[in-house]
Image 1 (cartoon, rainbow, N blue to C red):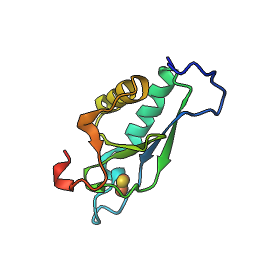
Image 2 (cartoon, rainbow, N blue to C red):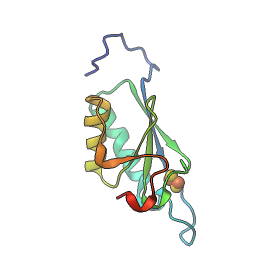
Image 3 (cartoon, rainbow, N blue to C red):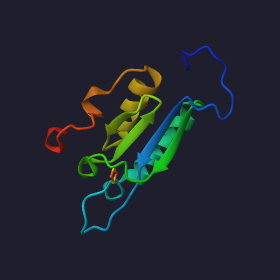
Length: 120
Ligand code: FES
C-alpha cells in the first residue's frame, strides 16, 4: 500500500495523526470531545488496522487550539495538515485521499488564520 519503496520497520511511523479529544464542560466553549471525537478516533484506529497501514500512528491529543467550535479537529504530520471531520465517511475520505493517495481533502482542510465563519 505504501508507494515509498523504503522498507518499513516497526515504529517507523511516517504518518502521525493527532486527533483532538479534548472535552470542556458543556457550558463552556465547544470542544471536540463533545462532538464525538473519541468515537471517531476509535473508528480511525480500526480502519488503519483493517487497511494494514503500518506506517500510520493515531494519537489522542488535547486541544489543538484550532477552531474548536467546528471540530473535531485533527493534525497530520509530517505535513502539518489540519482537517475538521464529522463522520466516518470523512475519516474514510482522509485515509484514502490524504494518507494513501497523498492528496489533500480540500473540503475538510482547515487553514490556520482562516476565519471560523468561513469553515464548514
Ligand atoms: S477542543 Fe479540539 S481543537 Fe480545541
